[in-house]
Image (tube, rainbow, N blue to C red):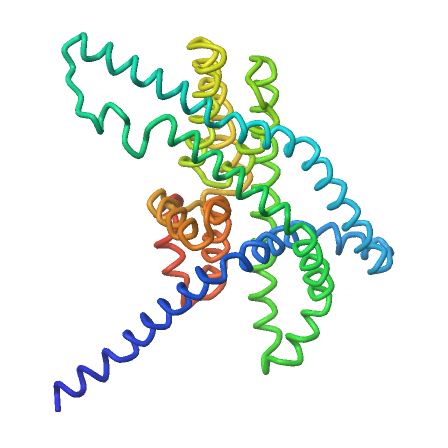
Length: 346
């Protein structure tokens, strides 16, 4: 009898685990559909405040939507004109850069062996963290970005429908829930915090990408706009993202312009990310919204495995939104604390 009760108690946990595995497997199988959807939700959340602001100023809903869409199209066209040519040129030159890096790595290995440092063949090649592999990873990110741009129409249409649905959501929630005031207050709190986080994080990332781009223009590093865009996207990943953004462009500066420019390139990244990550970002967002470094790394691995390179870029925003949602409910606030960095806990 006791054994039967123990097996019955384990059943819900096993069912939850099985359900989680099924959901994750389904998400991975449908990644080609989920990536445009998540990007559309991301864009829609950022566009919601100006959309509602225009309506509060007396602009009709469909005219407000048209203004938002024109703005998105203008930003997308500018983004495409600035990045696509550089992206294609970089991808076509990528094998040559990797070959130069391999020769640099071989020369360094020979120099170390002359000094009495014996390296195995795997250590000499750098293994999975070789300079050529790092440049190839940047190429994979740019290739994934190109495929996302190919789904621009689908993303735009999804943004339109999300914005139209957002205006009617409170009415539907009032009709569905028995206690709509409490449910709507929780949803409003989550929505306000999520929008504030995404908008401020996007502005900070844009500022970082612009500063990096200007610094690379001054140094004469090839494809400054492209690397600024990469810095903008990877700035959503705290701590780890700055490293992934700095390493490939530093290696490119080393190959094309020499050691001095490579050092200055790396120094520019350090200064920019110290200002943004250690001063501006905590001041604007607050320490309570930060995630622990372990959670950041695991979320990047998890979402990157499910959704590919774009999932790595969206990993921290997605996990942060989950944390904000957990904080909105008393029953799950403990889980949100476990996901956080521990800052502000007494």
